[in-house]
Each structure stands twice: as structure tokens, then as C-alpha cells.
Image 1 (cartoon, rainbow, N blue to C red):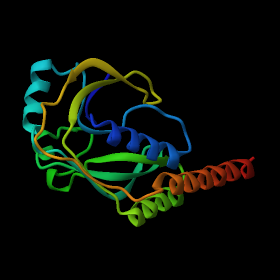
Image 2: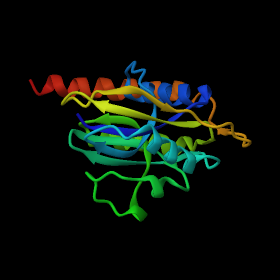
Image 3: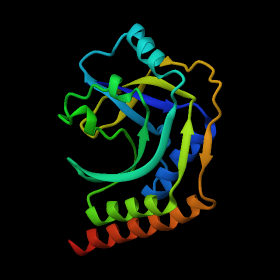
Image 4: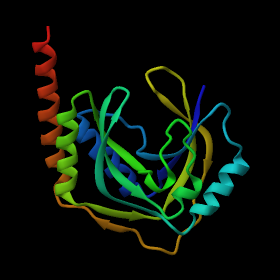
Length: 199
């Protein structure tokens, strides 16, 4: 089974907000952590020593979550928040994607759909909200993909962060989750109508 290295967020306010925003836009109740995939797939999981070395490179930099975008996927389209860190390019290893390092777009997926217009609408929503989070409490975890559906399962191997002297930046518009739920519900209803009309 393939293995991947994720960057996850240790500040509960950041971690919970990203999951809540994704669930509101996707109109789901998925509790899997929000993350940035920085390495993989591997045929065998990387060693704890390798993860410690990667984690050392991340210390003190943090991740800036802002901006937005969308891209096509094998199953449709995705909208995302950019997740930028000075050292991501040094740690990046995703051989399935032949993107040059200067063009990579580390991201946190916020929405996936077979409908391109829905992904574009979520991108527009993220652009208009103009949120900014810069968080230093991050850690690495290895995940295993165990099915053709793309289900991911976290392994016990976690490299915890070292305490940071930096203060997180939190600039998130008030009531963003309520607005996101309105958008997500409307898109889910629209997709359901399209499905019914195809039968």
C-alpha cells in the first residue's frame, strides 16, 4: 500500500477551524485532519529518523494559510487554500506529479466535486473571504492509503513539534463558517438535482 507524509496542525483552533470550513463547504461530517501532503507515495513508510530530519527542517518556520485556487483531479475538481512554508520545496517529493519545484502549490483541499462550476464557486468564496492564518504548531504524520477509494489511515508514527517562540497569526472573517454552510448546502442541492435529472 502507498504511504504519504502529511503536515498537520497542532493548534486546536487552527485544526478545528480548517476541518469545520471543509465540512461546511463540502456539506459533510468528515473528521479527518486537514493537512498538506509533502511527500509520497512510498512503497514502505519512511523511518522515524527520516521524519525527525524533515521535522527539524520545519522548526521555526510555520505555515502560512491564505490565498486559494482550484485544479482538476482524476475524479473531478478541487478547491483549496494555499499552505506556504519556506522549506516545503526542500522537503517536497511527490513523484506522481511532475511539477517543477518552483511551480508547486502546497495546499489544503477544502472542496471536491465532479462539477467544475461548483469548485470555481468555492474558489470564489475563499477569495472573497480573504482569510490569513500563520501557524507554527505543526507536526508530521505518515498515512497509508488502503483502498481504491483513496481512504487514508494515520499510522502511530508522529513527530511532535518543538515549542515555538512565535505567536500564531489569526485573521479569519467573522461568521465565515455560517456563510460557508450556505454555499455548501446550495452546491450539494444543485449537484443532487443534476444527478436526478440524469436518470
